[in-house]
Structures are given as structure tokens and as C-alpha cells.
Length: 79
Image (cartoon, rainbow, N blue to C red; front, top):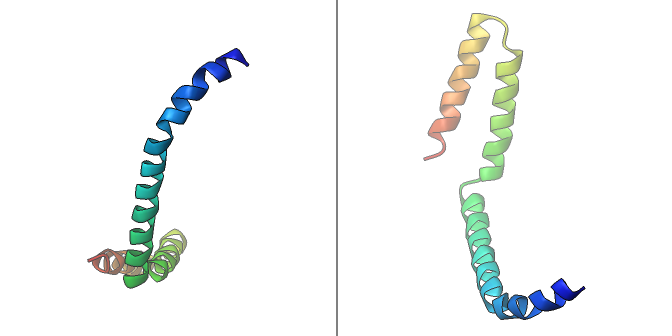
């Protein structure tokens, strides 16, 4: 209990800095959300999941080549 009371003034003094960092994190998260909506990032992630499933299930050389082509197409869409 004594340690808590001793640390309390330092914590209170640090609150403005903590709030500044929290505000910057919220701004960054907001920008990321806008970017991901603009780039249709959620659709890209879904397509990535399907492609990885294709890679896991591919057995013949042709299936493996097709899955690799799908992966290359996904990487191209990142631009």
C-alpha cells in the first residue's frame, strides 16, 4: 500500500504524456482504418486466406503452380 501511495504522484504527473500517446495511437488507428477501407484490405485478406488454403490443398504440380500464381497476383495487388 505504501509503494502504491509513493508511486501515485509520479503516475499523476505522467498522465498528460499518457493521454498524448493515446491520442496519437487513436489518430494512427483512424488513418489505418481509412487506408484499409480505401484499399479494400478486408477483401484482400479474405483472398489471401483462400490462396493459402489453395496452397495447402494443392497436390499436383499444376495445382501448385496455380496456387503460386494466385499468391503472385495477391502480392501485385498490394501496390
